Image (cartoon, rainbow, N blue to C red; front, side, top):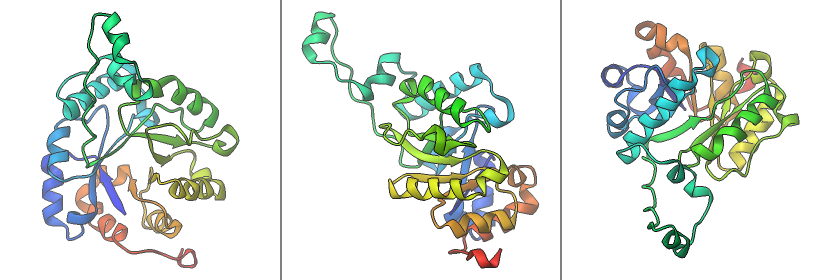
Length: 249
């Protein structure tokens, strides 16, 4: 299991060298307020998940700028709206000719170290999160998307068949996140081939619970960002364990 940390590239390199489990279990959690050197981080071998910061402070302008930053890192430029939605539709060459244009070249594959980017969500509200996903997902069809699972997600529904859905992000209240419905949704997601990420995981007990589920690929926790020098080493040691049984908690 990976521990995604909010540090910059220089800090991550130091931690990878300093801590024994860093070479295999350390990644980066980028956010709109901390998105610099994205391409360099990916090329340096760090797995990267990208959050939208809705839990802390949603900022539409900052999120839009983040999308442009990701595009520059992956494709070398900011894309047009058509290029963003092109994975969802096919326009025949003759139609482009009628418009006096040529069809755009297919986009390059995602960088292999880019794990996912969370679609905008509404914390603790599955219905509003689903609506937000439907509003935003066409414009993010060119990126590997993570869907934030919020309280009541089973009733609201999960957009399982969305073409570029790559990950389920375990969000929601603490009670819901640690409950049976979230566990069942994550197991179904894993059966469907999705990555599973646990958000707000800051303690040994919580890490061990995530490991006990047997389907979680990565976690993050602000405690490992704020107290990196005292917490990150034991956090990496914990996530590097093979598994934990529920009876141990």
